[in-house]
Image (cartoon, rainbow, N blue to C red; front, side, top):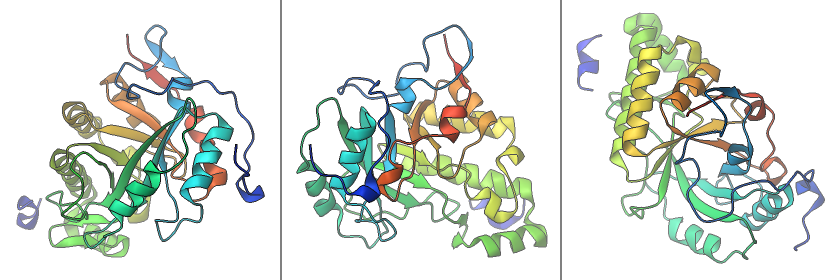
Length: 282
């Protein structure tokens, strides 16, 4: 690795209507995912209601690329029968709307059996794990750590620049190590974290989740357990990949399901996540 890296009951609009699903899920109250996944003997099983009963990454019109309101998302979650929903929107260092967002979520009507959580999504800016979050962010607010761009030593790199850096000698293995190291540092920098669409960046820079070694996945899992960070199985980006999920679950990482919904018709609706074989822990 080169020296530079060593520094390092409402009316829901028809557009939001969803198919009614069984209302299985955990009763509102205790955090999801802190106990071992599954209830059977050691082995791989389809996700159960403990996982599929939540959607931990749902965007509203507080994000500039989403189209549904908080209320529409809440009603979609009720209709699908979720027991958990995390309302999340994008932030940057200059973002000022967070108090308004939290107040708007707090003002939503109560839905019996549905726990409403909050969070903000921020990208990793640098190889040191610096996050693109406002300085006055409430310390207990969950930060969804996202790999929207590659965390370079001098700031975020676009996929195009990253592909060029790899072609010029950075090396695919070094790039993955940097990404994992930056992610772990970011996890340590906040009190409550969730890894959002982990490895969704890799195909954009000519790599895949299969290029991440078991050793690096195990290191990431250990850091997640140590920091209490949850890792989402992201429906939209179909990541972090089956092998990674298997390693994370076996290590005792708290796994949650997410749609990364930007429209309420997607809230709590799983295809890829539902097809994953989650390794139960005894």
